Image 1 (cartoon, protein in one colour):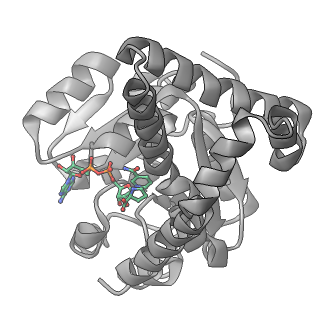
Image 2 (cartoon, rainbow, N blue to C red; image 1 turned 180 degrees about the vertical axis):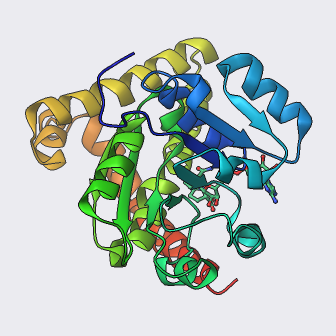
Amino acid sequence: MNQNNLGNQRIGIIGGGAMAEALLRGLVKVVPPAQLTVSDPSQERLDFLRESLQVITTEDNQQVCAQSDVVILAVKPQVMASVVTALRDRLTPDKLVISIAAGIRLEQLAAWLADGVPVVRVMPNTPALIGKGASALAGGTYATEAHMATAVAILEAVGTADVVGEAYLDAVTGLSGSGPAYVYLMIEAMIDAGVHEGLPRDLARRLVLQTFRGSTALLLERGHHPGVERDRVTSPGGTTIAGVKALEDGGVRAALFAAVQAATKRSRELAGK
Ligand SMILES: NC(=O)C1=CN([C@@H]2O[C@H](COP(=O)(O)OP(=O)(O)OC[C@H]3O[C@@H](n4cnc5c(N)ncnc54)[C@H](O)[C@@H]3O)[C@@H](O)[C@H]2O)C=CC1
Ligand SMILES: O=C(O)[C@@H]1CCC=N1
């Protein structure tokens, strides 16, 4: 068990889906599984989580609240209102409530909860499943520095965590929350493009994945502007500039701007649901 500042905190998760699993996979490395409880209506899902991670499972959301100091809300935004209001009496001010739902505002969560309950809103992403997630988080009115430190420690168990103002969180959702889908779409398209040029699919896949990994690692290691590294690949009159010209003609930058803008807008809309 690694050193961390989660102490003996008991952590519960309401909703045992994809993101809950990602969080639990990181948390079991820093918190004894006997301190971790997850609820879900699907017994099959609970069996899977209990058998693979040895955490405590229950179909009863109330039980999660009763036996946790920190309660993470990991249900879909559309069911958040009914789930949280049903737990209003159980989510007392001595607990820390963390929501990972896209679009649901701190103000909205506070209105569903009793007065004085500390709340933190987080936007993680799916690479958390392998400890390489990117999360941003914002604290509500009653979230103290100690609460923020606890939330950061939970998220750092599955990757990086940046504390930001809540005003950023819809854009974070459109950028890094949804971002893995954009990256996978680009990877898929590049593999198909390699196949189109006659490469075997498995070779194309290996080359594309290593190109993404290597390019990202180079930027992280050197800290350069991406344009600096792009210029290094791009010989005058060479192959790369021909490819870059085709990407610019295809409007790839505009498409990425539009994707982040559309997802950010959708996050804002989910607040009204
Ligand atoms: N999937 C992603 O990439 C990301 C998702 N999120 C947010 O995380 C939250 C969960 O998303 P996913 O894990 O992807 O969804 P999911 O559909 O995999 O998980 C939701 C789980 O909640 C359970 N559930 C439904 N009603 C329930 C209830 N009344 N009580 C307890 N559990 C209930 C479902 O059975 C399901 O297992 C959403 O609010 C989403 O906006 C945030 C960042 C990234
Ligand atoms: O698509 C969604 O609504 C969620 C939130 C961010 C990523 N997946």
